[in-house]
Amino acid sequence: MRVSRAKLVAAFAAIYIIWGSTYLAILMAIQTLPPLLMAGTRFLIAGLILFAWSRRSDGPPPTPRQWRNAAIIGLLLLVGGNGAVVLAQRDIPSGLAALLVSILPFWMVLLEWVRPGGTKPTRGVVAGLFLGLVGLIVLIGPSAMGSAENEIRLAAVVLLLLGSLSWATGSLLAQHIDLPQSASLATAIEMLVAGLVFVVVSTLAGEPMHFDMARVSARSVAGLVYLIVFGSIVAFSAYVWLLKVAAPAKVATYAYVNPVVALLLGWVFAGERLSLRTAVASAIVIAAVALITTARSSRAPPAT
Image (cartoon, rainbow, N blue to C red; front, side, top):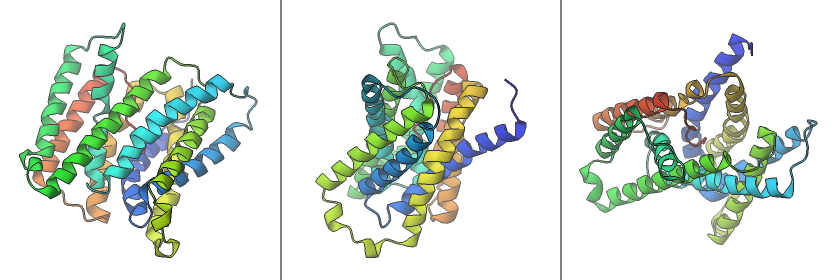
């Protein structure tokens, strides 16, 4: 399939830069917006826009079974995966969150290995897993087991690891269940379901009761709008298109570009400290993800 080089460059720039910048946008949004309510608003609005757009096509409407399956995938990918990112960024820097999310290929390899009829990882993949584990140990550091402040940070790290596991589970399950033929329609349903769940959980957690609209900053509103328009609609559309016209291994390279973008943006615009240990750990983890990604074609980490 012949495609415009300009379109390819623009699409790759979208998933490299926009998805890398969404971590900073999330940090901005949750400064004065309740995290769960913010996520619910983001996905409801983006889901409604995508649903209206996708239904303009001549494709068949989703069956009840496809609605159910897409809802399950939405819970695993967006509620479990993206929800972990939103909650964890209350306690850790945006760049660190992006770096931890990038280890998703590790979960993909392990789940693919242990599932019935799964594939045993190659030596290159095993080497990448070991290298990534080393990077994670360097990143967390022995001091993470010390003071109360570090224990909070460790809890956020665990939350992100579990969120990545949820995203990996959803990614593998999506390959084996019946979903709408239109990728945009399936994504719209996933976003709508996730948005509703976030709003319900937010209500149960009492976020709306303590939410004061007058205290919402323009910075948080800008972050939310950016997440809706660019993170959930533009970048994801570019990602879906790239999967049709480019090799999956090349598309998956954003797995180790996003953390670099997030780290730099967090350092420049949010004043996040970029220590030598973080820089070394980042290089190790990104190299590990690159090794695993090039050794096998796998799904990419959770879009934020």
